Image 1 (cartoon, helix red, strand yellow):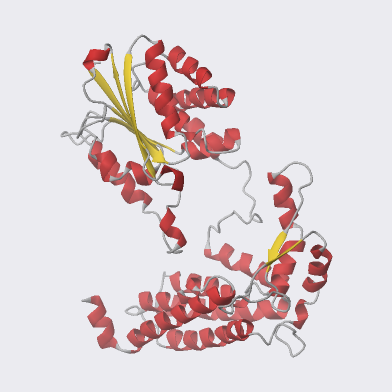
Image 2: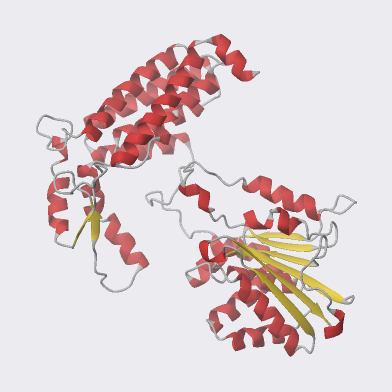
Length: 451
């Protein structure tokens, strides 16, 4: 160290950012060094960003200010990709000199509750970090990206030890001026989940020397295409999985209607936009969403087809006590705004749900007891409306309007929720559809939008 050594630990509240700072300060004391820590918690209790500034020195009198100034960090431990790419963190990075170790696990920030289509620009965030650490010679510097969250979850069943995995990695890279013995003793003195924390620190050290070990830890042993967590890897798989679900949802005839429409779009797209499949993929997803709405019969089927109980058994030991919160249209009372209020029911409801699931052939018939509701009628109308839009879009498809056709076909992806929430999202989707249709029908509007 030259006088002092600055470490910035950043992340989100509740993930152990402050704990890592405390461990480093105690380890410095055990090594006979001086240390100062300032924790900037902010909205930590609400999942906001947290920063812990740690200053280590050989003597207490060498530490004049604990908070790291601009370009004052020798090491940055980024426990969260979004926070690590923020101005407050990047300002402390000295190009070509600061070592940076960042957790690439993507944790959705709070605004996703208001913007359901929110996506993290992960690649752009990575570039921002690399650019900030890049030296004058163009070398990106000692930046290490590691999915510490996935490693911790794979080994310990939860991601709370992810920041300690980062610490172990940084230590093994030579970026922490303390002894391993002192750090491990500080972990023991902290007294919380000692065995797990020690293991996480040592795993981080191992991964620093053998990055492939992280991939081996986080890679699934066998990809299960039937798993709800499995993502389709091709257009063929996207269609095939939805065909299987629709068959269980209703019957083979219902599925045939879906497949015929998707294949018709696929053939026309191949003819008029050779090499492109985005329109077919959008139709495959959107039409499925409209045809497989989670009505009363489908909710009952999903609760009782065995998949829920299997996932429950994989996540919890013993026999859990179950209570369901439902808003059945014939039983739930409404509040003063006319919104159905949920009622709580016990395990006795499962035989009722199995019986309801068996009645799925009543769906969309005159004998359907739920067909009179405004929500069901609106959902049924959406399928016909969407097919009418597809007829127009496919009929006028060419290379120039292909992207606009894809946007139109994907509008139903924005229809979400149940009850009053869904009705509101339908209105918004219809407004978006009208705007896109006007643009599709008018070449002059498309030109203005392009300009």
